[in-house]
Length: 173
Image (cartoon, one colour):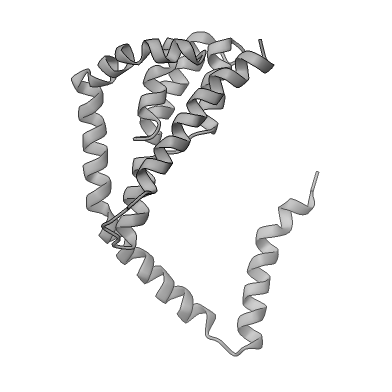
């Protein structure tokens, strides 16, 4: 069945082309300039991404992730966050792909309809890959002083973790 949502992107593209034709703008030339600028941004942020992915791999391989999960167990018990989800909560702000691998493992082990699977799903959807996002966006814009971006983002992630456990325990148990 075809819905109106199927036409949004083509409609926007048509509007851009019509606007360019109306204002006598060389759309293709501007597209090429934008693509070239995008490639230069990729070159600028690639070192930050490589460093971040290397650090995540080292963090997981060293056993530090398990150590942090063990240390956070009393706090997780207070907010109804299952201890099995602590590695996901710790890794989610750092690595989306690492968190997704842990998330898939949780769902295959406990099932998506279990309490743990539901909390993991809410946790995954209510948090962000904070360090990755900050590295990419501040690296692309060459901002070196992030000021309050990191602390406020981590507070939002913690709120998402806490509320995922509380919400699922209140609404779905």
